[in-house]
Length: 404
Image (cartoon, helix red, strand yellow):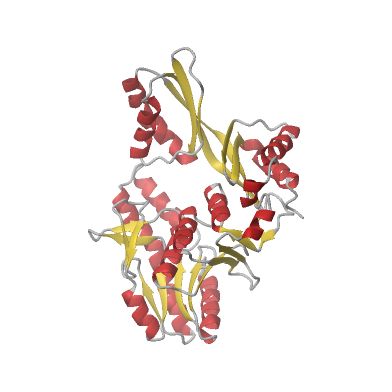
């Protein structure tokens, strides 16, 4: 008998019929003799509806109240899932994040998990019950409800698997694994059987919507092996695990694209040693995450800095930085929200040359201009015009023969 943590995303529990389908899956696993902790998301669309209601009242809703509001979505799902299990004779009990012992830091809407004390869950498992836990949420040390950010239910599942010392963690979603790229863009995309934590982390942080990047990072830290699979069929999924030597034989594992990007350009910045530090400290204090950064060499006493952020953060950057530039003695800021970020990822890049040349040649042959370039040991990322993003993905996917 194994202890299994299963996570079901919003589309998997999107309506009553799908919740009943999930209950049948849980029953099948339990009938096989397994103990189960099940993490569920809010039903598909519910979180967006709640955000829209808040924005209809005020453009800048209080973050504490947003967490109080958004936690409702998962609490609805845990209760309905528990009821669906009761209806087919399976003993089950629902838990909010707080009741599950998930303690976070003090940051509303983007909280980080500090510790998990699943005593109640372990007791109910011992009593033969299925434990249904609300994903995406926890409680801080002052008793305030907090949420973990978009995709936080993945993190809840991985963290519970680590805390409960689960034998297996299964992430159920609306796709049956991790693909070499988005099959909606490239119909020849192939499902990957196994992928390393590092490759999955890069793909998740670079635009792949299958997993939340923080959850992959957590899984790597605590050695939680997990499988991404579909709740709509019984096909094997993709195993995410520690890197093994054979993985380096594949030079590029996948191509990711993120179309929700913006480029912020600062021109005429006085060339001072502390200028960049002052700018990016201000962005950090405003909790604005920056990705690609390029600074042009200064020749006339001024410099230009270009960086990328999520599209919904661009205006925050434009709001925060003018005061900083004034303090530094000058500079202008502009934001452009018409870019996309394309990345090729693979641990095999460490031992193979020519990856950049292959990528740049493939994009150049399609007339796709590179606005920014960033590299790491296992990835190459370029910023391109959003209108050409899909074409860029197809070109990169074909250039590395990922359809084979």
